[in-house]
Length: 205
Image 1: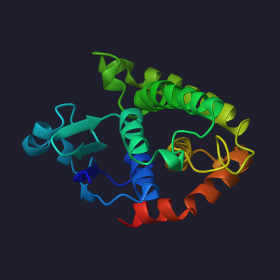
Image 2: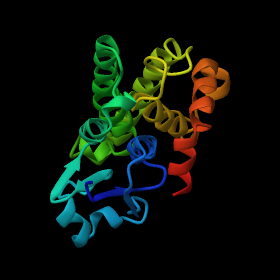
Image 3: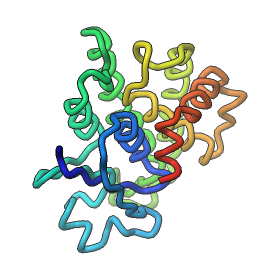
């Protein structure tokens, strides 16, 4: 059995892989590392992950970063759980979702909105970057709304896609989107996922 440790921050994207760990049933040690308190910028955490970001997963002497990679690692330990999809097509769909969610929705849309300084050296340009980024978030939500009518995003059981979508739903509410009225299907989906036992455990950790 691997000695698994998991670094997370409340309210961050680490909720997705945190949920997956609980769904796996594997024993692990969780270590809260607050982004809001800048604990990810500390020297001690930087030695663990020089990128200074969560989530981070370690097992034995290996350190894994990035949500898709961490999800892949967890899924390999419990292949019968189907955490990255069950059928061949499901696995492709999960990968498709994760490429888009991690690259476009998280990195570009929310990245531009939350941290415009990553996209320009000119502070005067921050506002225009954020305006465009918020439109990209809205476009992403429209796309998610059109694909959220089932109990789970892919297949018939929980995959990494579901709690990752919940992260963005929560962020949408936090930044002032009227999620309930503008995206009712996405809202219903997110409420179902939020009630999943593994999500509840991750939120209570």
